[in-house]
Length: 129
Image 1 (tube, rainbow, N blue to C red):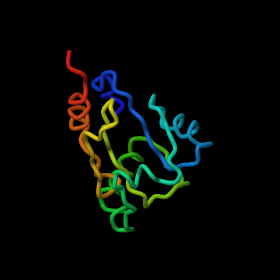
Image 2: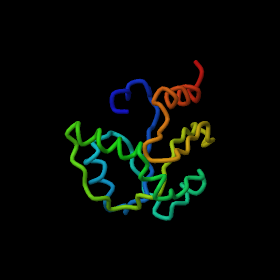
Image 3: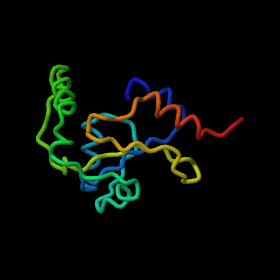
Image 4: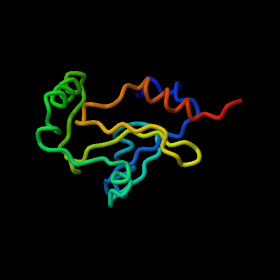
């Protein structure tokens, strides 16, 4: 994602997490991303999007284990999770009027949509000149 930020033009990228609000600054610094972070401790937004909790098999799938192996091989240090690893995420694009224009509900943590698909969804929301 980091390599493609310029392709998102002026889109506002927001990361919604269910983590303790007091830890958001540290999490943002650890990930080193320029995005806005907000906390949804009660997971209401997750529920509205339909993001489920995954089973052990879905969360620790072969694809997820491969993803972590790639991260380790690239030099990334993994830390013990401090949040709910079974809460599956979502990738959503909401337009300026608050309408959901794109939604991807991955079946496992490694099954995220291609960046090109997200860029297409964001561009579809851009105001016409």
